[in-house]
Structure formats: structure tokens, C-alpha cells
Image (cartoon, rainbow, N blue to C red; front, side):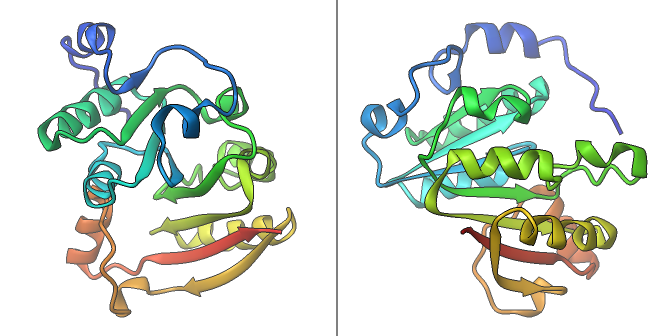
Length: 208
């Protein structure tokens, strides 16, 4: 379902200058400018529950959210302001343009509950399609990793061979992730799914 934009969103984004990245700086500036140990990227961060809480709990890591929906960006910034964190930034853009911002410098990518695009004709829009995996390989460090979670079994079954056939090694997998003991920070969607007892599919990959 498409999110309805609120009237306050565009003016808010236009005036916000702390968290939203509004210009493309030279590749490689992230570590120099923010002096953090690692750079973690969440593609399709939604309302920002996971990424802002993660940044709050891990001040030595720079968290960057990549999101194309303006309402999500605005609400994520408000959460960052409430937490008073300085290790979070958000880019309002499409994942097709990742290479304009990063190159061989991202330590980890999170793909959490991405749109499954269930129709076969829309497969290239899935964030786990080889089209995007080739981009991720370019922005990740040599030992960079991807954390993938979804509630959609069909997307999961589509994605695993996509990763393996495109230069990633699977190091972990679960078809009912919350049966494990873990202290993961949850996205808004994940919280709802967990309360419903719905299985969460999980996989972790490293760049080969």
C-alpha cells in the first residue's frame, strides 16, 4: 500500500540540515568526515525504528539510511532528533544510485523486509535481484556483509540463489529466526510479525 504524504513533510525535509544528506560529496568522505570505526547502510529503512535505535546503542558506528519515500525519511529524522544521536545520516534517493555515494567502503548492508514485488515481471525491482547485488558488491568492502530478513517465503527462496550466484557466500541461514535467542533491534514490521508468531526468514552473506 502506498504511503500518503503529509503536507508537513516537504517543508520539513527542505529545512532539515543535520541528518539528511543533500549533496553528493567525493567518494570516500564518510570515514574521514565522521571518524567512526565502521559504516553500516540500511537500504529501505522504512520509518527508521531499527537504524536510529542501532545508532543510539552503537555510537562508534556510522549508520546511513537509504530511502526513497519522503515521509519515511522525515519520520526517521524526528526519531533521530529525539534520541539526540550524531552517528546517523539519511539519503533520500533510489537504491539504483548507491554508487554515487559509496565505493568499497561499506562494512555492512541491511536489507530488512524489502518490498517482495511478487509479480514475475517485476523481479528486477527486488532489492535482492542480481541488478542490485552487483551494485552492493561495488560499495561493500572486501569483507563486507549483508544481513537479509523477510517475512516473504517466495522472496527468500528467490533471493538465496541470487546471492550465491552473484559473488556472495552464505554464512548463516534460518527459516524461523525468532526461535533463536537473539538481542536484535527490531524494525516496526518485525515487531508486528513476531507478536503474530509469523516466521521470519534470515540469511547472512559475505562478499567473496
